Amino acid sequence: MKKLQRKFKLNRTSIVIPVYNEELRLDHCFSVIKKFIRKKKKLFLEIIFVDDGSNDMSKKKIINFINKNKKNFLNTKIKLISYKKNIGKGHAVKRGILTSRYEWIITCDLDMSVTPDQFLIWEKKKFINNNKYAYFGSRENKNSVVQTLLIRRIIGFILHLFIWTLFNIKITDTQCGFKVFHSNYIKKIFKKIKMKGYVYDVEVVLALKKEDINIVELPLTWIHKEGSKVNLIRDSVRFFFDLIILKIRYLNYQK
Image: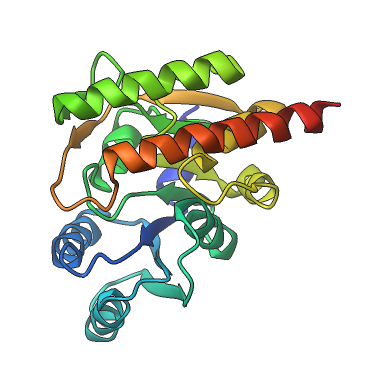
């Protein structure tokens, strides 16, 4: 175990951050990332922004951030993947993961409701100790610190009931954006992912289960940030219908 933990500390880690029309929140994201880079110690880091067809100044701001800092960060590479058409968060995360080059891969929302520091906390507490496991941040973990709106908790609970009913998934929080994977299985998983929107998280859980990859849910600190592009009503309805589509695909796949 000690040998595994020591090796892990020397591993290289990629962070995939999907972006869609986030010019107003990018400065905060950049600030958090710079602080994380200063804390990461010996960790070799690759940060991958995936611009999912933004039509604001997001792409330009990311390019400026990269050009301004590419010589300032030791053992850190910052990259941008960009395409013109908005396809969906699931597609953006898939592109980022398939492009990543390092062993450990973190997915992280741009609003930094969970900061990359969470990864270092998990490492310090020796929560991440097996490269054949997937690690999911869970806002439902009894040790998590969560600051969010009541309406989000209610809608999240309802959607979780749908997920549990349709797929019998026992994961308490499939939709938290902060997850940690290892490259020895996750690229194989994401090559098969078809859902392009928010339901991709559920499909990932099903795919991990099919490949006998254990999912470990871990506590985190999650703080709601204003400015989200998620419309609680419209996107929740879309999420529900996408779950039905995924269920049909899942049943056909099992035949």
